[in-house]
Length: 266
Image (cartoon, rainbow, N blue to C red; front, side):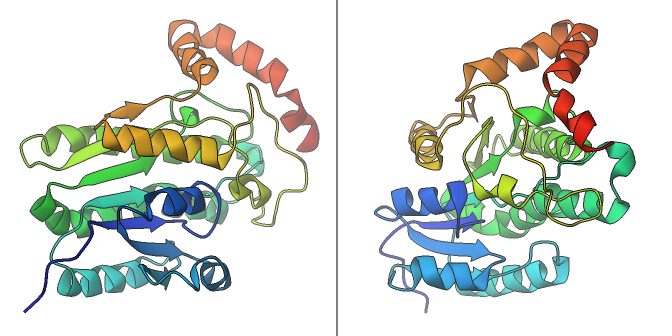
């Protein structure tokens, strides 16, 4: 017979670095953590002495591996309180210079994996009236030069989960969509170029760079306050509104501000 856990249970993907690692540290006192990352070495390095966490090295682009892990959790757990779809990947390359396998990889990590994990774990979340947290991006709302695949993946993520939110309204399962802007996180250090290698040119950006700890604090607060959406950066929030109101002007200004993306890709 399964015994009730001493703590609520949380799954965090992309847990070995960046926002995922910061969230793991901040949620540790309140949850039994199931930590997922593609980097087995980093998982062991970060969490080797954590007796209140379990680590799983999983490549989220491998849907069969994800499905096998989901089956094991459905058999092992009585319920789930929190799913944080944090793992992410990006690219810095013009759309016309980006191979299809790069687009597919970005879509697999940033969109298909959160959908597969959420669908697979939904029965456990429903047992605990749990919460799904998705790491979106303002790039899902507005075009960003040199990030067409990433923008597409984050747009799909937002549309899917906002629809799911409405469908789950009577089930007790809630959703938090997080829309960070420019965070000092390893995702950009591992950004792909158009051929799938690591991009060599630095990222272009607007607004202020924030730390992962700063972002994680606001996510934890939003979880506790049962927020539906978190817009931590006013600049990018208003930029997204500006795009909707005056899209042609936004595109001209964005192209001028991020001109380096054109220069690096020609």
